[in-house]
Image (cartoon, rainbow, N blue to C red):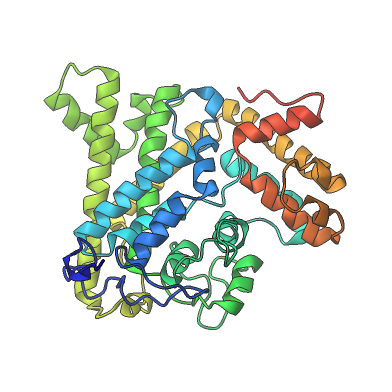
Amino acid sequence: MTIDRRALGFGNSDRAIYAADPWTTRGRLYPENSSPTRSDFQRDRDRIVHTTAFRRLKHKTQVFIAQDGDHYRTRLTHTIEVAQIARALARALKLDEDLAEGVALVHDFGHTPFGHTGEDALHEVLLPYGGFDHNAQSLRIVTKLERRYADFDGINLTWESLEGLVKHNGPLLTKDGTGTRGPVPQPILDYCEIHDLQLDTYASLEAQVAAIADDIAYNTHDIDDGLRSGYLTFDMLEDIPFLAGLMSEVRQRYPTLEPSRFTHEIMRRQITRMVEDVISVAQERLSEIRPESADDVRHASRVIATFSEAMAETDRQIKAMLFKRIYRHPDIMRIRAGAAQIVTDLFSAYMANPKEMQSHYWVDHIAGLAEAPKARHVGDYLAGMTDTYAISAHRRLFDQTPDLR
């Protein structure tokens, strides 16, 4: 049987000159033969979707925990929305859509149960051992912790996908080796010793659109979920000129629209305007920089896929509103305190007796480790938990478990 690769519906010549080329990647840490029917970036995307880490996102908190209701976003639904926006941006800019989608799908793998609350709690208990960073944890998952293949740990993604995972928010190091946002997490530095991801450059444009898609997605769906929960009201949205304009537009066209449809009409316009803003800025910067390869994008002096100054100000206003009205609402803070206690209690219990980590693949080996590596293994186990599993584990080990309602 023979397959004509030229006749396949991907990897065509319509890609821009500055896009990542799926046929000439920088390869994988463990060399593999290419597929005759899928590009390397397609294979990356497919491997990401088939991981246990991807499936666990279904029961991990975005903002509202699962007990609050079935219609709120989880890490999984958030991830799917980010991937959809990233793919739309990639298509508009003639990038490799599979790479952009893959980076979007993997970007939250390292998140703990209970959202940023769980991450903060895990970072606190792991501070004596190097702390915790969800981006570094995502890298550990895809390069070490997923154990599916006979020939290697992790899922052996291409250099470009790993680069996008680590650097989608920009360079981690300056040219002189200083951290751009503080010290670079040690797991990232350790991996770069064996597979250099060039931490002092920007990532591909595919990774950049995945990063800005993340902002667009959660700015929009956190408003949607906030309105559903009652923590936000339409009157609160009026304080932000951009949102007030969208609401006025919807009211003029649909003066008697019911609240649920009214909300959706606002949200779909918000996504559209933000996506169009990013496309406009990216096209302008591409015309100024004139990159002739993906490497030219990496070595550009600035990010290319980003908001305009006006939309960036709107982004700041929305984030400030969400922080004040939702993330720091007394009800949410009470739930956060309970969630943090669950993570802290479990860490202490597992450090005292690793055998309590039921079904953990290395439990006997962990018991004999020194304190620091044992703590890292316990951190891996905790970070991989879903909300529901963490609550169940706490109830098994402790007489009282915080009520996260």
